[in-house]
Image 1 (cartoon, rainbow, N blue to C red):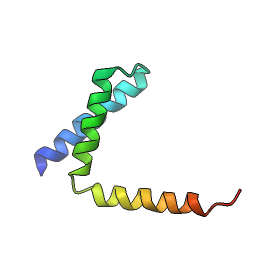
Image 2 (image 1 turned 30 degrees about the horizontal axis):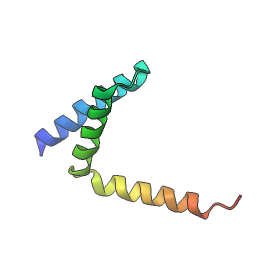
Image 3 (image 1 turned 60 degrees about the vertical axis):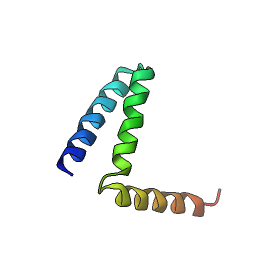
Image 4 (image 1 turned 180 degrees about the horizontal axis):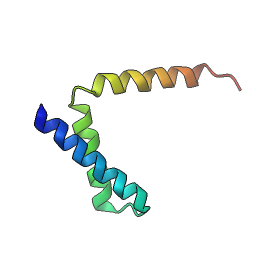
Length: 64
């Protein structure tokens, strides 16, 4: 578990650096993809899922 969280943090830092540079290349996209897979297998996944579901529900209930 400790290794998984360390990898997630490392990939998150790398993804933020890539996004701040404004140049998203193939290697950058692969890092972001790996970040997503590691987040999905971490203990943070249910919290992220619940947050996204709540946000989708709020957006879905808005009437223009």
